[in-house]
Length: 562
Image (cartoon, rainbow, N blue to C red):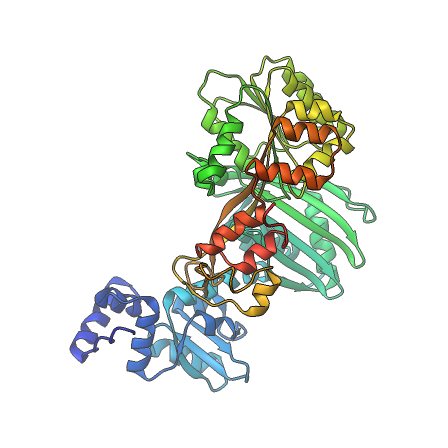
């Protein structure tokens, strides 16, 4: 049962409005603090007092935001927003029901009748933030025949410099990079279609549509601009190309890896953002616990990282946090008494007291060649960023067999697929299992937003799709975020690593060398305590930390109970 709402006496309300005005604080937040209410209760209180409909985050998400007349800058400055509902009705959303100035301005610029609605300042800010990147990227884009200029060195990104760009296409590219860095995106996708260029950001592992620049000429020139920045061949449009460039934003240097791919409508580009400074700040004092590991999983990883020699393999798709896990493990064992050398492509984070070598394939420094040189540098522990070929795999295995502790990553779906990957690379199974201490397969799951997560009852269809039944989930505390200002309306805030870990025992080694059926190997692994990724993910759903939709997106259904 909800607590009764406080009464807003005229004198009290007048005082709170004056305090909000003098401090520059939104009146809704001032009332919220005064009465100790949550955001939803405050919104309902003011809505009831002013006889205006309330729009929570769920209601805002179904509206079609209109920046055609009431532009983004004015909306952000005035803390209001114009939007249309499913029936085409125009709404002016305010955070202050007494904001007569914004009403008058909207009446002047909208040119159409509108109704007034109330929204919480945090929810409105989240909605504006969601649209900001796309609008800034689109700002000033138009026209054709823009000239693309050759750049030298790293470009400096700032909102002022972007506004000064004469070329609309250059402004589009720079704005897209600028907004992606602000949003914390890991990748930028530039997709060409028959209508123009679509811009998407990958944030927390999920692609979000940001903007669409109309016109095939704009798309072609934007891709050409990216090629120039990455020093690629702008005349070649029939084969894939890879490159990289650097930009400077707010005094810090950011690496951008570029992949150009031909398509039916022209070319697509994917830009991987490597913000070393932001990563360094994020990983400062990083521990395995900070990644979300606990209990038996944590103990197993630490045991593998503390071995005197052998190989620790971490596997998973791109963006699953493999390198971060290795960084955390190395940081925990970096006590200064061992020589630690890494070879990476590229070096994503500077580890103090560790010799880190960047791969440079143009100069002939590959993983294999670099690893051979590292062995002559008297290392105790070696990290190989990724095993991509048979040559690197062979050297890594031999290094682990000759008294070194080798940390490395490989792309595979689970711990058992790794075994097949190495054998198919031509590595001798006996040598491989002799060198291998253990394998960690991991994924990153989005966590429910703590501010808007609430108990839910999953639909029967979702339970069936997830391979569950009502009986099996009676002790589950299902929760899901509805979307708020803290999570940018997504319902999720932050990510946590989940893993399955395979510790190599003598029994497992014998089965692998004997090429035993995978079913036997899985049974032996289960007896040794290996739990699947699916089981680890379900444990987070059981405690209400994540959702069935999220674990179905990340882990394979039917892989529980190894």
